[in-house]
Image 1 (cartoon, rainbow, N blue to C red):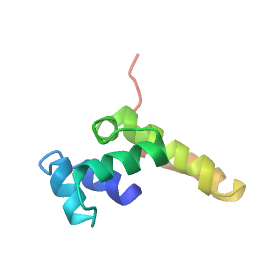
Image 2: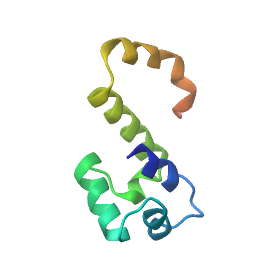
Image 3: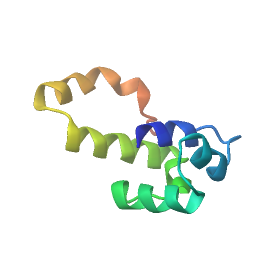
Image 4: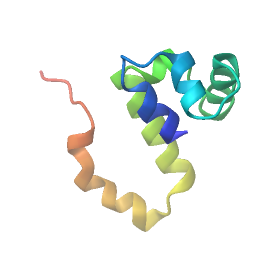
Length: 83
């Protein structure tokens, strides 16, 4: 799903074009797959908040504790709110 999210991060590429490039038979299939695996729609993934949620969910579900510990060095990947 990270490949899909990466493709969707390019706003010049439509969801339908992303689906085609990634081998889905339709954009509807891409949307259903995204929703069932991540709980996010392609539109949500295109936002910074959605991208961050996707990365965090992936990390918690698929990375080991030592791998999660290395995420402290990846702060620059996440957008931070300025006070």
